Image (cartoon, each protein chain N blue to C red):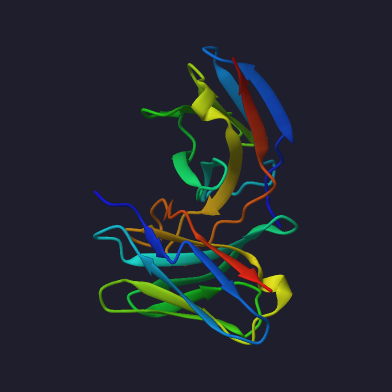
Length: 112
Length: 112
């Protein structure tokens, strides 16, 4: 079973920041938070991951709370092409557990 | 750099047949994982290969099998196809098992 809880759907206006929350209250100290998104008819796309520090790359920022029980993915200037299902995944950071356990994700719709 | 390549993109089979799907990972990636995506069950982990060895296996019947070659390319096979095997089959690769996985766009298998 997925170890994360996400809202089923969200809307955001084009050009605004999209903030996608994720709860992972049972996360362990050696587990990373990963974010992927899936645009219709494509495979999931890796966005970002982090352990306890906030992370930023060219796609998004990841804010992890100090207790690590929740996180927020931020798309700073959402475009119509950011419409997708966004998955928050908790994954053990060792050589033995490669599999990703996907939940239902958040369906993000960017409106013009 | 080319992404993960899956062939074929679409496949139609009938019940009882068998099928082989192919995955070419990103150059330099040695870990390959397979997932099944259906509307009802979402994305589910099938198995993972690293250095030609299966390291993890999901909760699927023995009709689902796979292998990895010395060049890291991977194939999965499904024998005695059932209607419920209709799904999008996704392959993901990473440099090493604990690195972010990057997905191909999948093979859509339809069973008649």
